[in-house]
Length: 426
Image 1 (cartoon, rainbow, N blue to C red):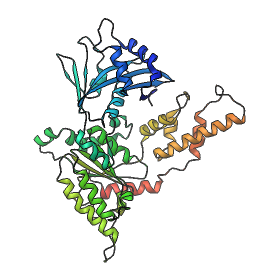
Image 2: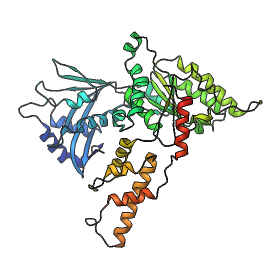
Image 3: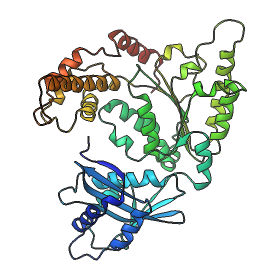
Image 4: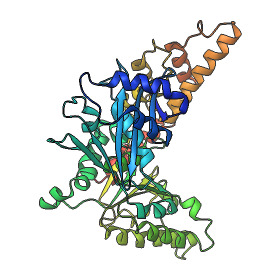
């Protein structure tokens, strides 16, 4: 977990902003933009700051000119460089610019400026003779209204890199799904057809939604989640609403479309007489081939119960891959624990917590972490401990773990392994 959080600039931040600007300047190098320009940009709600322990340790500001945003400042306080803070500030700016009609984010730096890692890490391209950095922002202004209409959004960059652990799953998805789409010209030259639709399956709470969002972030494509439960309230019926949703999505240039718990609308059809659920399943089976004919789109369906899906749904030609997503591995569990253990608890043995939470989902770990904190609070109040005297220990967490039931049981794991043998297509 990073020791900072990125938020919007507030007028009360002015003094600390000036201090960061001064500390971030390269000695002997004249800045391209003045401090007055930077402050004006921040006052126009185009600035973000990184805060650690209520102190501003980094700041970024930009100015919008038509469809382009120019980065006026990207600075870190002394002692905060080379920790990924610059990339985090760029991501913070991008997430705020993505829905304002911006096509490109650019930065003009002095030729003598050497601290350019944050731009390179954020996939900007560089004109060497000018030190000119530029990165395309996905989406077009004309798509903004449509994207909002279908409930889609542009996710911040870096979600893929932020996925800790799950090495096998990440490698498989990166190779099979992301590379052919991100390197489409190279893939086409080598005869690789980019995937159009994939299924992610595995036990509940194993991060299938997180993977889908990370794929959209990695590609830089809008993320649109289709909720069958919401469409069901449409007066024309679920099947009609589902068809209309995909017709609306067709207006986007690119999109990662995600349907979670797809078994709700694609379960095995039983009985001789058609039912309402049969109609929905049939409609979805018709939608997928049409969806596959469109360029720049990827359908990701997730299910906890792949055995319940209609056999026709998983047939070759509809889905390119059927990929298993298992419970978080040790590295992933350690990263999840890092997210929920407060920074003030410096002596927690995270490796021990990870080892003792096999088969725990992220939600299980969060529950156990909150339980440990609650027990520590009750103990502190009961014994009259002050904030400086109270503490969280590894034992607090181990006790909470022992009182938490894992969502993924051994029986679920056995079924999952069988499903991999019978149904996975990698």
